[in-house]
Length: 379
Image 1: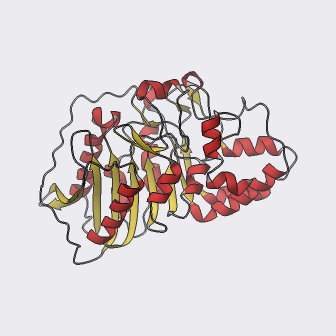
Image 2 (image 1 turned 60 degrees about the horizontal axis):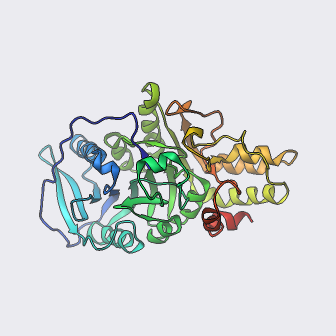
Image 3 (image 1 turned 90 degrees about the vertical axis):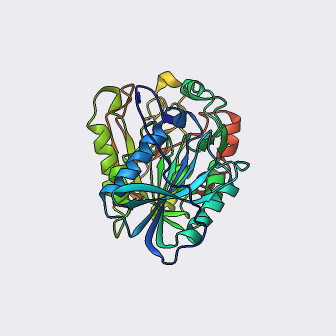
């Protein structure tokens, strides 16, 4: 889910500029291929946030020399068939070159379709390196935030981990199964609640670096015009991309001044899992978690996402947390947060990763949670 409240778009213009079908592989490998996987067949598309982000992508291509990178967008709306297109600069104009059109019979939130697109980009636009941006709604690992009033207001039913293609969602394990191992050097999730240890750990073999938000994300998402050039540097400048997103929202005021963001080195997550496993094995579960930093505003419903470090330090009590501290600082390369989330939830503790605490959700969520890699790694 990307939050729609407090933001109004009065005018948006969007045009797909080219209809040609280029399904033949490129003759020459590029330095990097960036795929923006944009599922806009939901309320984000209805409000025009897809069009505004596509305009930002166009501006990035028009205003920077990105000829050594393939900027690809897989794009689906309520009214259009899923399309893979490349954004290229032709005499100062951003042109959308259609590479492939897909059947609408297969939802974009299925393993089959996402895997197909990932394989297609390797064939059609081969490169030395690949990056992925996931664009849509999300609820983290949870099967449902149905007890959450915000979820009820935005769409119903509210069952999804990532993505919303005309009310068809995919679970976190399905997302991980859809993405090939070791294809992407980074994954940037432009969607709410995906900045948890559960999500990062489930995707640890899919990417080297993982960027996401632990809390609600403003509907406008990241500034694509600033971040696409960062992704295309010789070594993707992921810290600067995070800073660009944070600085943009931190410069705003009132409810618009809201963001959590973190950059995770997935190669360090096994050490973090072992450190957490030790603490869980040698300490009792907390009976009262009301003082633990959460990331869902209380007025919106029951919180199921809590700050990982705050929870571990509170639970550990007299145990040494040296190994945990070292592992966490190695795993979280960059983190930043505004002081409040939509001016309704104060952020006093922010480690860069959220976590679930057993007993805080219904049986369907808990049963699913116990199938996730993170749960099994620490128990």
